[in-house]
Image 1 (cartoon, one colour):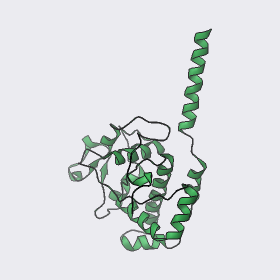
Image 2 (cartoon, one colour; image 1 turned 90 degrees about the horizontal axis):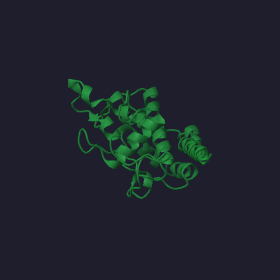
Image 3 (cartoon, helix red, strand yellow; image 1 turned 180 degrees about the horizontal axis):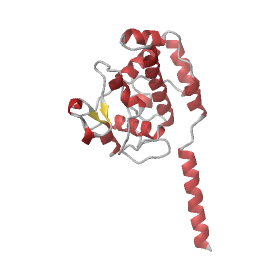
Image 4 (cartoon, one colour; image 1 turned 90 degrees about the vertical axis):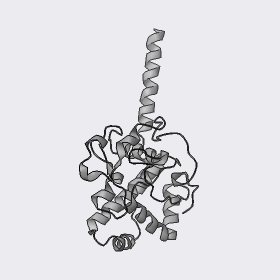
Length: 215
């Protein structure tokens, strides 16, 4: 009887953990519904005149997703994997009051800007990039080790041929000859700390979502 009770307790704890780890806080949906300042898309379009309006909108959605990942991972350092989204973030920060209000409402603290970051090598990512890779994969229900596709944040630069952007491949072994400049994104799913709730590793200092770094 005691053994059955123990099994039931373990199952109950596992269920609570499962529900908690997939719980999205209210602020997640505030970010989802947030309307970016007028003129932000237009300024971004000037930086990328080869892109159409719907493509600029995709970059803005990439910024929205990055903010959601920062919220879910609670001040852990998440590097920025996209040059285009990084430019969108920088333009948003220039709207000083709007950005401050957004941070206060959606995070409860000021989220400092972290520049886009490349992998250490074609097949080795930094800790911050590994975190954002795993977090983005989790949000989009992608296997981080054997991804069938790239998360939105990791496909934008290559998709829109962003100059000086960061291009990733979801499958290192099947990269085409013309993809020699692509980073191996799936390699980042093999290391790092264990998954705890929405987090994807241990605490880290520095900038990014930790909020300690400067612009």
